[in-house]
Length: 74
Image (cartoon, rainbow, N blue to C red; front, side, top):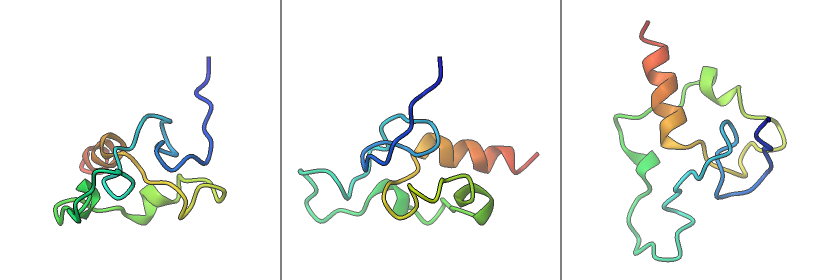
């Protein structure tokens, strides 16, 4: 069974799970999303995995961002 990925703002374009985007939350009180944490980076090697259809339309989830960061340290 494969994960169906689609351009849905609340879903990660890499794994299809919720991206928990704070910017999309209706309860956002002006607080920055988790992705604005300065200890996280979104290098080209990660961003290049996002399809053209999903670029600038949905956020990568924290799990995928951290997994990529850990994988690049090997």
